[in-house]
Every structure is written in C-alpha cells, then in structure tokens.
Image (cartoon, rainbow, N blue to C red):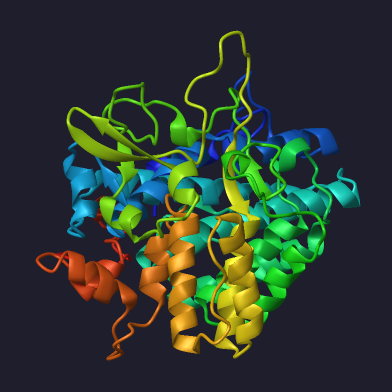
Length: 477
C-alpha cells in the first residue's frame, strides 16, 4: 500500500474540477483551501458530485498509469522494447525485476492505490449524499465501481495477492495485508456486476469518454475469461457485441480516432493527442518521436515477424523505419504526434476498451466450450478487417486456441499488457503445470526467466511502511 503519509495526502483534497478530496471529517473541519470544498458541499448536488467524480478521470495519478500499464507488461512479454537505457526499465526486458524497482513502486503500485483511494472516497461521498437525484447517483456510483474494478484487475494480474481497500478509511487501509487473488477477482466481478445494474447504455458524455453499462460488460467479459468462466465470458461479450452500439472499424487507420465506432471507452485529452504518442523526456515513454528520432518504445522484431505477411495491421499499425542504420518497428496505431498547423485540437484520445477484444474474448470462450464454428466466425471477423484469409473450418480445438492467441497478439499489441497477461494465464502446450509464459518467454530468455517472474515483486518500500505485506516467491524480501 501507499505509506500513510502519502496516502493521507491523497485523501486530503477534493476531486472537484480535477482536485482530490478527503472524507475524513476531522481533516475537513480545519477548513479547506480556497480551491477546494468540504465533503458535504461536494456531494450536495448533481453538478458538484459529477464534477467530483470526473476528477478520477483527470487526476494525474490516473493519467500517469496509462502508459506504464501498457509498456511494462509489454517489455515483460517481449512485445515491446525500450530504446532508452534505464536500470528500472531494463529489468522488465530481462524479467529480472528487483524489489527496489522505482517503476513498480511508483508508476504501478502507488499510482494504482492513489486511484483506488479516490474511487473509494467518491463512493463514500455518493452513498452518504442526500442531495443527488437517483439517476445521477446510480451513474456516478456505477462509474466509480468500474474504476475500482479496472485498477484492481491490473493489480491482481501483476502482483497476485494484493491489499484490497474497499472503504474510505486511510488509517486501516495503510496497514492492510495482502488479500488472496481469488478474493480480489471476486471483488472485481462484484463491482462490475453492480455497475452493470447501476449504469445504462447511454453515455453521460460525448465521444464515450465516460463509462456506460457496456463498459462494465466489456470488463466483466475480460474478468470471466481470465478466471476461465467460459460461459459467463461469452454471455458478457455477447451483451457488448449484440448491443447494437458498436461496430468493428474496417479502416485500420482510423480505429483509434475519437469518433471510431469500435471504441467502447476512451479517456479524453485536452490536445486530442493520445498519451501514447505525446513526446516525453528521455526517461519516459512514447510510441512516437520527432521524425528521424528513435521513439522511447517500439515493437520487437520478434512480435513483428510473427505477424502474417499479408496482415494489413503490419503496415497500418507498424512503420518499419531505418534510423541511424538500424531498423525500428514504430507503433502507429495512434497517428497524431503533433497538431497540424493551425489546428487547436486533434482527434485521438486514449482508447481503454474496444470491440475487437470482445470478439476475441467470445471466440476463446466459445472454443473452450466446444463451439468451434462460433469461435471461428468470431476470429474471422477480426482477420477479415486485417485483410487475412479466413480460418480453415476443419481446424481442431487445440489449433484454434493457438490461432486465437496469435490473433490476440496481432490485434492487441502495445495495448494494456494483453500479451503478458495472455501468456501468464494460458497453460503451456506441453503441459506439465507450466504456462505459455514459461514456454514463450522462457524460450526467448532462458538465462533469466523463472516461473516466479510471472508476478512482479511487492515494492520493498511498501513492505517497510507496512510490515503486514508479504513478498512474492522468487524475490529477496
């Protein structure tokens, strides 16, 4: 968890117009700064409560999570390579992460728990409020539950057992022990199921920048897939696909535009340029750089070469470019790096969820349930828009599952750690209690890979601050 001092700082300010608040009455009684308001005032009306909840979307901790949650698992899975030498980043490239790794401690752990603190504070304020209309109360509560489930799903995927704060109680939360992963997943599913009932299909914002019912369904489908609850995964994905709201974008060059009908949920940016292509300092990360310069993060040759020659994603979403005598595979899913001359905003945000993943979730669930024809049809929907031939209808179930894994790799590269999580959750083809991560990453990095690398270490600084935290196997402390 966050140290208490840092946690308390998070809880002291109000998420109103981008500020974060404290629900601790004793702290509020001393009088909020002029740029902040007290708890009761913040949730006294639909307008102020909405502004408070929107702060989760805009908070710096939330924004600072976006790139690390794609980049670090991508480095672990050897789908991405970091071109700026950094001890913390390089540890991911060799699956040799130390307990003092600053990216794990700050970018992943602390920012995640900061966002959870915000979500729990919002829930407390919403539930205690007497001034909200039922419709707005349901919408805001559903949104905060989606956020909490989203963050917890990443924490449990990366660390396994993790502290599970579900109340706005800084003192108690700062000393929580780790909760078993199965229980964390149960909480994720419970939050999303409740959000599903609270939300409607209507988006409360333009361009799908806030969550709706299908956002909850899409995350439920993913959670059920990861938990191997195949029938439930198919049902949840069905709800999204058959909602009539979304469609696969046939134009690969506009899949990530902010008007793409494939987008289920995206986070807006002030500039209309995504976080993934915004240039950062040399130690940061970006998929884009000035012409002739090497981006901080590119696709590995291994993943690029695994894509079929005729795959249009290989040309639309990757630009093989020679820089300084070396060929780099630039990730070009997002097209904008800078605004056009005279433009005041671009047309790309940060895509959180999109429809293609739901087809691939349903395909895998159907294949596992023995509905091979249905699974093939779903995979073919994705292959067709990539300009690839359809699958052989006589394909066996084991071969189909591998084909789905390969399709997920080609469709979702560079997005939200999908490749890493797929390798970790999928049994090895050779069996023996191993995973695909053991086969694939172990085969590529035999000198450094061990099975315990599938989980990241609990940050050492957090264990010093909270002695109740145990360490994952394979790490020093």
